Image (cartoon, rainbow, N blue to C red):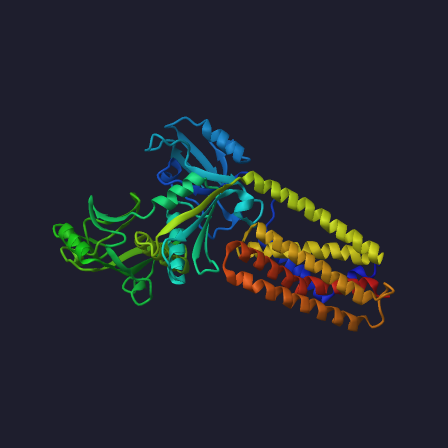
Length: 528
């Protein structure tokens, strides 16, 4: 036995498994000892918002989120510490919030006297890069349905607009997906972890009022006044007349331009409001001395310069420009295009392509998710031990049962690593898919073991041919499973997709990586 173990780590299939396991662990980045709370969202016009604190972007990995470490010098170990300290802070005093990325000085005072606290929505600091679904962390799920018959393009546009609207409000860790029923009706599923039912209901029901103002006069509103927002390369993109420039050693800046068409009535209002404004020069370009301010549900979301050529001109075609910056030229270009898309979406949010109604809204308790995770981990460990015992009883060889345990654990790590790498949200359906993949792996290990050992439970003389036969069976089972999962993925429903994805990924890792390594290990350990 001692002489065979070193040979295992020289086997190509085992080396491939070890390398991919290492990459999976890097993607997961497990840190079970991590303390503190992370910022999920920041309320608009709150003390924290006014101090410059913002929620994470939708694609931010869990371990990269801003983590609150101290408040006024007091350590924050968990969410209970945070709310205990926050509740004891007097109003109208300066608060020092230290995070792993910055130090914020904010005054604990709201403009709205009915609101209290710092305006930060937090959760316990994640201990890995695995994103957990709504059932595991708690939050609110909303099912929306268009009031009239719509096509796929309209639904996709609505999904994009809803997602961007919620991002404007500081809620970024959200999931907005759509699905189609057997009758052809489309539904939109909105999941907001960490938010209450009241918050989400208010956001979904209240958004829709968009206004563009110059001073205190409304130029145009969303919906009937905006007839078109260009989102194609012919009339939207980087401003070629103002190439990206390097401002200093650590900052680049770029500009964008895109066209917006407004109604004739709105064009006349714009001409009347701007005809008496003065012209000023900024950075070699001429603008009017007032900006056009964009409001979404009475919240100021952006200020844009007005080109001098628009003064008193009732044009229905307006070019909106803006800027973005970054540490490198590539980052500046990316941020500029993202900012352009954000503004385009804000202009469209006043005119959703479909009217939506709330079909169902439900609140999920995070304590249930924690209890479910604890139970599933316990049951998983027990199941692995039972499978290993059964295999030992059948084959009477540790050379079979121990590699089986290692193979099952490896498959779980590979699936979780893949989910962490693509930023996939792991929900209950995904966990069910993992269990299916592990179950199929156990079947395949038994097939391989039976073929390699034969009836006498000793390494068969023609074991190479028998391994080929075993993998023919394994590969046939794999193709059958994948074929069964593809329709579920194509169905488009969030839960079905999570189940289908984890199942396909799990069995693929098993067939091409872990099970060949299992066969190699068994072959090496049992070979005379």
